[in-house]
Amino acid sequence: MATRKIIHCDCDCFYAAVEMRDDPSLRGRPLAVGGRAETRGVIATCNYEARAFGVHSAMPTARALQLCPGLILLPPDFERYRAASQRILAIYRGYTALVEPLSLDEAYLDVSGVDRCRGSATLMAQEIRARIRDEVGITASAGIAPNKFIAKVASDWNKPDGQFVVRPQDVDAFVAALPVNKIFGVGKVTAAKLNRFGVHTCGDLRGWSVADLAREFGSFGASLHRLCRGIDERAVQPDRVRKSLSVETTYTPDLHDLAACRAALSALLEDFRRRFERARDRPAVHKAFVKVRFSDFSRTTAECLSSAPDEAVWLRLLGEAHARKALPVRLLGVGVRFDERADTEQAKVQGSLFEAG
Image (cartoon, rainbow, N blue to C red; front, side, top):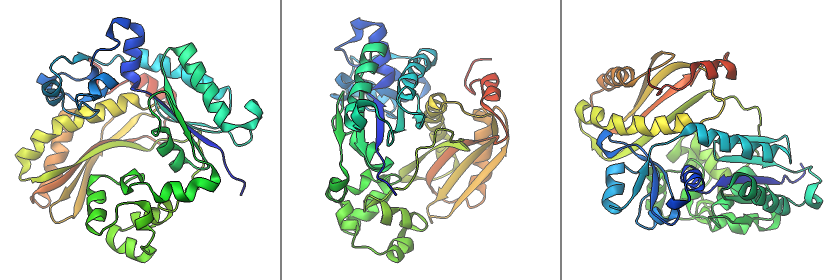
């Protein structure tokens, strides 16, 4: 197989960048976009001035305001964000038809057979970023690599407004030095477990066999074995159909009873709302579900048919799932499954689950 040339483009603090573009008086001041503290909102994104205070996305807004009392908090305006996103996608598609959007502000591009810029993916990324800056008025960062996993990691290397290339001959050394939490799918809990085994980098992880990883991490073990070696054969899929969308959180300490789980649900749903609004061309919603992992590591999922679930639906599903064991809970997840028969026009008619009626 010929070596691919993959670019991962990621806009810098996208929502905040659009707000600063449209109101230059916000520049240089700590700014966040997100829900209000009094409604247990969370931060969707923030600029680098706010990050200097320790503010970050998915942080409860109340905590962000404690860290940065002068924080300017704005509600999200998804119509403006979508408009900027469409202009950026048009730029991408001027280079290749193989564009896989991940959200409003990031996408993979496969430019393997593209002749522009003398066929150089590095030069194409520079040109794309310059056009986003000049035509859309915000900045983007990019990673260039032979596969999606490494390109995504690389796009974070020189943020903001930078790019980083990992050439095929440099893949092995680049990945070996990566912390294990850079592997797609490795969250805090899995990273902590690996660290307890003395595994801190991808190079450390290469000493484990597939069988050892499967024993400790189940079906995810095979992915760990491949990715720690920089192996990722996933193609850029411009017509990928999203089957579901969800968010989940692992709690330390465990949530000790149903009341604690219900109290935690609001913040989780706020995070889900943010992800739902960012998702592009989503099909119509078909089901709602709640996932629970108990303190004994067993898990269960409760779901129901629903085209427009609200908090009451997820609360009911939470009660149903929790009752199956009634143990302390270490992980909660909420989400929706999409109608695989639906097209994007149905989704447009449906609109947002979170629009006021």
